[in-house]
Length: 247
Image (cartoon, rainbow, N blue to C red; front, top):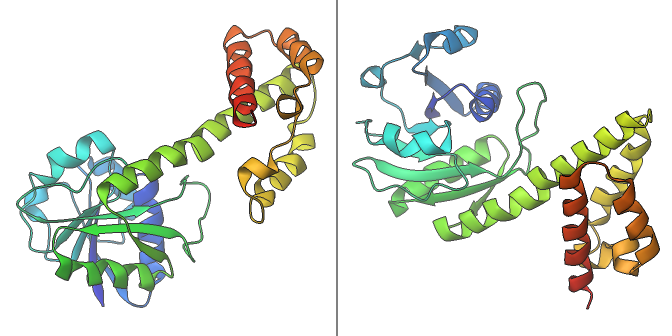
């Protein structure tokens, strides 16, 4: 049985708490947050607002904002592994047994996530602690990858492009549809097919559209249709980027 304490109550923490609770080989020892109000929905667990009151555990999983991770970890004085879940924060150098347990996924509190085969990037200060993180990943049926800090930061950068930026483009498409009284649902099959296609094709090979075809008349028409100047520039930049890819 792997004894885990979760530090934080946000999106990532909420999903980890849920999956740990369902696992037969993990035990949630405690949940910490500095704000007692945010701990109320976890009242069935042992909770605390004080780092000094953390109980012994095999692993302390840090699920808080990236810019708060280092400061909080350096305030901790525990015997277990202290692993943060950030994609951009390097392996820390604190008095603790520092590690990383980074789930490469997007999380929202109102949507369940399957951890089966979910990529978990692990890194440890002490080689002997690696088996704890690997065992924890196995306990929730996730897939562990040994990834160092530099590699993980590059992965995080790539993830921003394929997730956050793509989602923003969905937002723009949704806004265009809404302004012209069109249902966004019309675009959902296209979005799904675009995502499915890269399961068997390289993204470069899967590219279609007026930019790749160098269909300048359609490109000009689209730019003229756009009323938002930021979206006009974004369309131009993306078009140029696509065209340079196929020069």
